[in-house]
Length: 114
Picture (cartoon, rainbow, N blue to C red):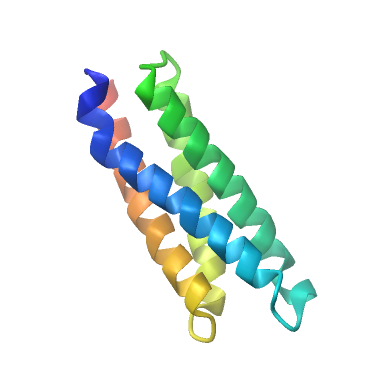
């Protein structure tokens, strides 16, 4: 598969990474930061794996399947955690939505690679 076919998922990965960074920063501004520790940690992990997976896709890495699987799993965990806070925090709602879209895109593409 030529990497230009990956553009939609690369866009989803980059968008998810940006939402996760925004969410982590906003969580640090919350009154009860200790309550948000897991959310912040998952946001940071998710952002990192999304950027790494986008890079792997752009260079047609032979390990792209591993990255997609890891990214889908971390996006799922981050989305689940953010959903716990989504009713009261718009940044968590937006992050959860981005994580779900990215998780779905990763799982969909992972099924097409092999």
